[in-house]
Image (cartoon, rainbow, N blue to C red):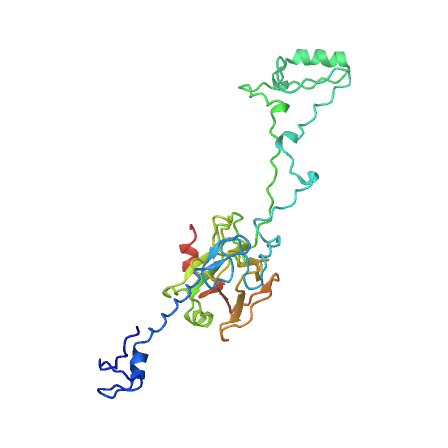
Length: 339
């Protein structure tokens, strides 16, 4: 049996349209007594990161390349292996020809023995065992030997007050020393001083944190506080710019950690002794160059081609990093001389 309807005020009514007691419409009661509103569907969980399709390593959301293998999410390709450069100190040099090798000390020939006196008997060596020096020979014996050989005997000489030391044997004569090469790097060569050991330098590289460049990149990483720049003396002709990686055995000369927008092998900075060059090594976010008097650069330099740097240009890379190449001051030459 179906119970009689109840109005919104709680009165039992036999009418189904209006309450018999208070006259309230019954439709509102039926609507009020209807089923509850459907529960909202739970929101889908947000992704935790980006999985690399090459090595299946989880990376941070919004990453442009894989931190483990370098896979580029934008182009869908692996990073281009760096081409060997003659300016890279890590590149093995070709073997020198056998004829160009410096002669060893043992290969130096000793002087030939003295020729014989013409009688078929070789002349004794000076200072040989059992043969006294010519200054200590008996004049009578010398005259007798000269008569037997039919030669003029030497005039007798006065004996010295003290016998002189016998000369050293021919076999004990030291070979001539091999002269060292006279050519050394020029003192005016940038980055390389007059000492071939590389302990001196003439150029430095400043690593700055640029808030203006950070604002243009819109990076999700928080920017460190911009303080004084890091000064790196340039003692090599070729230097790698990037971030270190122990798993991939990458140890750059210019360490740009902790800017995660910079690739492990970002760019190569090199010199020919007069000019400085910059080459992008296929980085994920590119390498930018602009003069100090201009605004922020918008186009990166070409990948795989050396770009000649001007004395007033700045290098921008990553999320906030700016590099400045300049000559070292006298105070820096003294401060970093033994570093």
